[in-house]
Length: 201
Image (tube, rainbow, N blue to C red; front, side, top):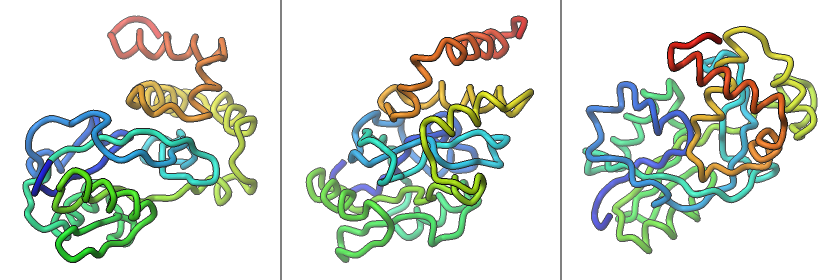
């Protein structure tokens, strides 16, 4: 990784680069990025109101991140690329530049240490926060999140299941572990897998 600028990911970016695809080079290097606290605690309109994974120091567990090489030489240019893909403002994209020793965003210290250890010239990452409280009027909890997911219907439920199931195996958060132990979730995961394979839902 010496000398390159890297884009860090942990959610749908792994399987859906979207318009970021022509701006990166090579495959994802799975689990090659720094560990950060992650949880499925962000309500995502893009994902039909399912729960998306985000950096969450209050409720998350340390999980490995994944890295893909940017074609850009300047981390600030790569930051703009990621912001465009995520339809997010620049202040919601974390950035670290090893040359200047400057950056911003939650987990910047972890990313800085990772850049120093690997020789990376810089890194960018999506720095969206949990918005669970804003949507539900109460703080995220495993009980409430499970009840919320179980109450989704139709396409919203399908997409919620699909997103969590598609997340990299290393994204082993408290909510994901809780869901994996639930018979209703395992049934839904099998149903959505059949649906995606072209079989009956």
